Length: 616
View 1 (cartoon, rainbow, N blue to C red):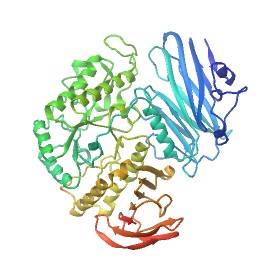
View 2 (cartoon, rainbow, N blue to C red):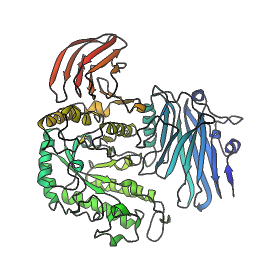
View 3 (cartoon, rainbow, N blue to C red):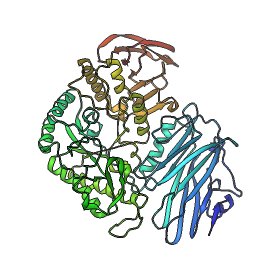
View 4 (spheres, rainbow, N blue to C red):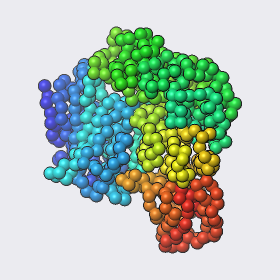
């Protein structure tokens, strides 16, 4: 038995490249001048009859690839192994990872557990200026792993670790993955874009194309109706939302059962019990020139569902609090059942897309046997999920190449982009700041996928300026509205119509322009999207905007997503004369004039939740 705490010398023997004549340890920032070497990694674990090989390759100054391979003489259960390395805590002030936490400063512990349907394996550290200091990403976004780091008080170093095969894993003969190590001094968002592009180029990770319809504001029934759906009321909501610039309705949970207790004990037969004439409902929505998406909880069969006995012995585990079983996708019959449900629904009812929910529940249970036998054609649950979702997307696209598929956090990683084209922030009802953070975090790894906000809701008696903050905080993602439009005050309707119309007019800049979020440690108080002609700046906490990079633009807008009524533009040079328009949160013109953006500070009065438009 080969027990190892691998030394740098042994790793060099196993094939380290770029190692030189003697082991070296990296130091960040000076480390930009030297490659990240395989011999800076140690390994804990018992290899048993496997051989471990770690090599490294320098791609350019500050950018390296570490290749990890595990090889056995025959197929065996792989051992748990932990790769470790460390860097000094020099000029590091904050961190980023794709987890749902909003604390991006307490870097004592920074870790993420990932799989095909849960988060993405990447960690990033940066300095006070949001410049990347160390970003680490793992190529294996399919299998379960843990990537983390912690600050050790005794040496003030960040100690990184990558844990492979922590849970029981099917027998294998070979395993390979890569680790991307980026220490280039650039904005952290630019670094994460590079990580996203790196994943997208890998075999079997190619993202799905994003139809233009995925980039349209939508109405969602979840917060406004929950499971108490009524067709006539929803059609009225569609008529109102269409007037306000929304182009689709997402009919959420509740259509498939008369049970309204918020659990899933009766889910899994997927008959439109609450909406018997689903085809007629869809047709009426189409007559309004709107798309129709329908919600499904992919893994669940409720204990009271007619289909429950049909799949006995083909479940991963039971979710007691919700009264539902989780299907095992390693059985071809299970996969075919799930795919057939969506194919039939699209064919019979004319659906334009699906909201596929609870993907993260596809994971082994404590008693799951990880073998490909007894009717299972996969040993790994995660590999079977990959097959299931790949087949779903392929077969639905055969019938509709523009099919819309939505996933939400935490299943928003690089593999999920292959199966769907809409990635949504996790639930945060009436929490504008959290919605801003989650949409921004999702967008940082979202690439060309359509990034959607969690559905927006607020109390109908709230002041219109306060209600507007729900929309203004998610302007750099696709809006989903979920208030009862026929029950809110007229000024709320005017506010929604104005901002949705503004979003539609500026979609190219907001969703396809260069996106720069500022200060993740402060929950992104400034967000900027810009192309060659225009910039849109979301101001959420700061009073001052620095106009660097705007000198060649024809226009820039400032969204005042605050209750404060003045902003200051700080110019490092004379930008010349602009036409200024200031609007309130309902789109009413407050005042307009010509203004000189001279070098120095220029103050502009603007209403709470208002808009400043500057045009050369």
